[in-house]
Length: 264
Image (cartoon, rainbow, N blue to C red; front, side):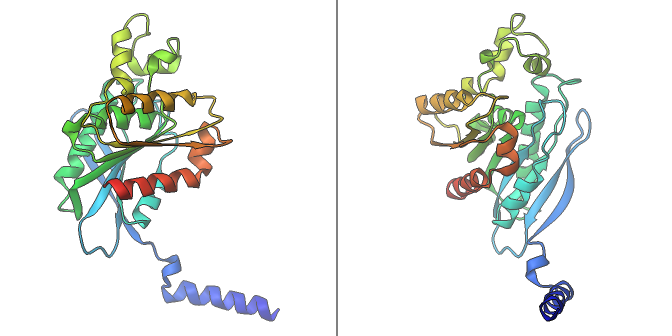
């Protein structure tokens, strides 16, 4: 009983004293980054008590390009806790706005973050991207072009070469046409076809047991990066499936954050 009272007393003291154990190390703010077609917004996660402008990452969720499945909030919080600002965005659904609409949305978010960098104490020269699943495809497709100025990209569970699934109904919906009708659009949407020598550094991670997006997709992407001499690293999360990596692979997340710290 004495130990129980002591424990409860400690909890009460921590809760009422403003102890840093329960105090967030970041602030959050909602921001509309475009209303060109329809209003799209993101949530900013901003490290507290910073003396110099920080690096920032545009974070892009998955969901088969049609829904917000996996909101990336946990990853955004981890970034902010470790001193990197995160801008967790949404994009238009492919049900109503097929490719390349979502890619354009991600690029608008990158541009908005750079344009508002001073306001949020972000270094505009140290912006990266992070996406998982469909979001991984989008951040690569949007950010591999050096024109958009990303310094590093993290991409997990990524469908990178669409022709691998020429009959996929999910990709057909995203593109708006079947592969047989428009192979050139499928190839244009595939990140493996957009690597340039000046593309940003890339960290790829994937589950070894992923049955939704075959792990060979990471190999396709790594090979495309190697052919152009682009700095890249890969991490295969053993015994993890597509959703298991997103939900439970903290090792993958930390390796990706460490990569961003080195590159940004």
